[in-house]
Image (cartoon, rainbow over all chains, first blue to last red; front, side, top):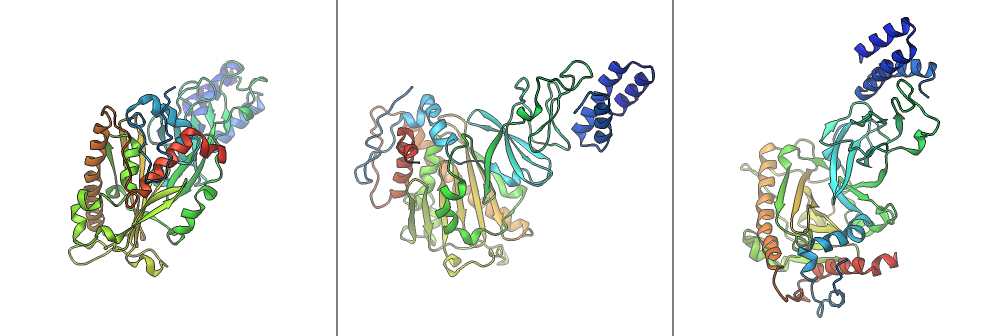
Length: 53
Length: 381
């Protein structure tokens, strides 16, 4: 989960939004899968970017 | 479709014949039974103790229908069809802990413990997790109607049976004194027996006391045939009871504690009832047991046995002794139910006869089967 988040952050800084959201989605799904508290923050980021509801 | 004439089965006990051979050996009839006997009734699939902690999940093969049982984070035991609403992938293929979401291993669609679809990754394209045509509210898991009683998880797959509490009101009232905490004895108090028999023969044997002195000779020293009585509730349940239940003791005379608040009836009574179609229950002052039958075809059945006590802390050695004592009894029964199954291949057997004095509970079960297969019972509902 953390590796996906790191990669998403790096791509987002480079302005590669779609690629960043791909990795952020994976981070979110694995956080959901594990019942991790980070899921809420990841969901909020995706939602803010218009990628989640 | 295989059609058998059940007219003779529906006659009064003194005249009736038993179910024809095909109802025990034919896979086609086994298939025919699924809807009226299993899907449209309340059938047992496992026990709540099989999923003791929040997040515990286990798959169940319910006559070919894949289900899974999950104890949610809210502590509630739910049953779902074991299929993702996306491409129909199996979701839970072995007993496991689901810490977070129920994630489909195929495309990672995720569901909450309540079955709500909460994530659809990349459904609108890479990194786009929504799509205007994909309404998550319409694609939650298919939950199966479930009811837990005596720790057994009962389901009504068709969803249209009367409520469990109504169907089994008489039995719930009869055994209301056992509506107390039941503590599963743990790993040493559960075992599974495999029987080369049709599930109905296991039920039929369980319902009657006629065989006890012959098949379980160990009982004869303290439990005579005349100490038993029939229990018959047409269309609901049948079984038998004893008036001379004797508590098991350890070497030093230690016994299990009694369930609290029992009336004097239960000082020496024990009752053994089949909740149709497939849950065989036994209650006594100091322990109860549940046997959930899992049919694996016309001629093969698994018996999942669970023992419960009045206290969460009972002596291990006594629990083991009790489990072994019941195992011996149930294995003795396997000999006769497998023998009856083997004989059902006979040519021209007419279903046999029922002793009007001794086989009433068995006849009641045959009547239940015949009525449901012929539609008369379902029409009445």
